[in-house]
Image 1 (tube, one colour):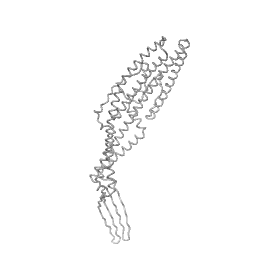
Image 2: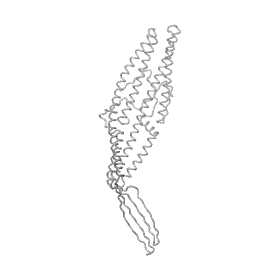
Image 3: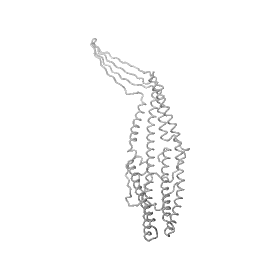
Image 4: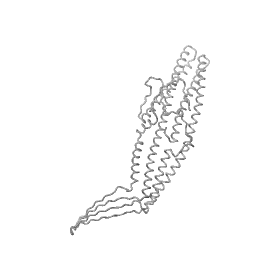
Length: 408
């Protein structure tokens, strides 16, 4: 696992606490995300469609009332019309409705995955920005101290005015970097607040000079699953693509067998009041209707359903291929970042030793200021690389979460 890469000067920092864990942050983002609210409504509608498709009666019953007046009497007729889907058509409607419900559920899981990955990446950006801010402040403090020391030696005649200008330039550059780092931290915290509603302060309320946000996940004991051991069909993107394919398959089967679908039966009651004969006559009837789906319209619906089925199948296969590549790439990237961390740690240690030697030599007048500034810059570059690799570690983890489709 990655070891801590900070100098002792950056250790012991107080933490800016985010939500207690990733689930809490995703829940907060979910409540504010418009697409999430739409998915919840569609899931409720899909549940209703599943229940509707399982009924033995198709559409809602139709009641017709009519009354006829004539010179020889009047007639009152009541008709109840019930749609009776054929067993095959009912089964295919059920399959399609269930597949569409599964698609909505998979879409909800996939959106939660997307939101989680987005928050993980933003969390990595914020942690890196705060670390760069700490490093910029350390560099500014160091530049101020060096500037004061150089000015004193310039006045004593030990160093030239050019050395004084060089140290002042280094100090002004450090001030600019520190200001930019503060601005970036504020912008990223605003993005976090916009997504989750959680407002975080830029500076520590306890007065600590440095502090940085906690990570949403602890990678200390995390080991990614090798792509060959992962069931790719469990990924929500594959579940969504497969559900859409199953829905189009059921629709194609329904259209293929639509020759007699849509049959109905009507129960008729008629009361005939004959004024000439001064009597009432009651009639009871039963009418069975079965539409015959022939012609160009049916062929068009059938071909359209078949085309949609083929398109969804092609999309499913493409998703499978892309996801396999993405899983292998994210796994390799995570391993590469961990290896890179060890190299950066060695580079930091070496730069720290070089700076200590250069400071002693400069104090004794055996080292030029320009060389000291160069060595100091290389040390801060090593620290900046350490910040980048820690950020890359969190980003690589987010890529694994996205590729393997599981929430921590």
